[in-house]
Image (cartoon, rainbow, N blue to C red; front, top):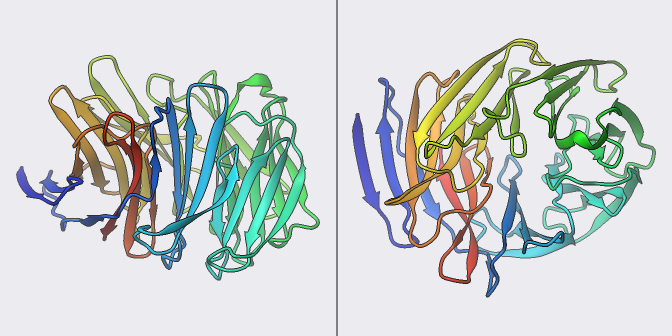
Length: 386
């Protein structure tokens, strides 16, 4: 094993490349942008971050949610003015996190729970100075603070997946355009009761939706539409085990039209486990499980994405009694070998709650929030080149 270490000016980013199992990799050239959000004299109990960016790098969108220990959440959405996110402006304040997609012109499209409705907001330009708003229909009670999954098809139709958490139902909404004047609704599941948890969605190469949703009794459900209109569906239920998968923060990725489920677990022996389930079919009837164990506690839920050559990259945190840091892990097709890069060594406080990750054709963005003195918190975005 070889280690290379380079310390940069504060806020204390590091380059640390670990070459393992015969693999070699170039150092990720990572820089840290200025913090673009601050929370002064508050001590939020929980944060939620999400990050999205168009493939050409136009205007990353960062959502930050805070909770002071009450039932009330505050979410702010920042539209970055450059890829570094060194400048941004706040848009769309809501009580729930938005899902984000981009049309063919890189204009953002947001889907968000608003009271008992799901609202679709389509920006008319990349800076979202103007937009159109569509209400997708009454959905009852929302109860998860994960974003509403939204996607845009090749012909610029919009697909949204959402849940009625009061009745335990999951729906797919099909819109023929961003205006969504005549949506078609498909019922995915209506029998989960109060067990419905987190919903994810991706589109396969034929624009057919693949939806996953977790239940708080430990199951993960797969629903794959057989065409873009979702006229028929194939379903499956998987029990990965609550000791293996934190289903509050799992991720759904798609590679060659096959799902990959990524999640983490936190054993009681001061370690953390990153788990991957490589599905061999669209609804994960069979899968290859891979788990990687590391020392130290995990300060927040990890985040994963795929590189252009379909390698997995995971952003995760690690904390021990003597310190810790923010790491990038890049692995081969089935994570049999990997490289691990230390991006940032803790200067004051560890990153809190979940991380967020997004990529363009040539750039990786990692968002994290950290306490930098007794009462202040800031959001940072690290930019890395492939």
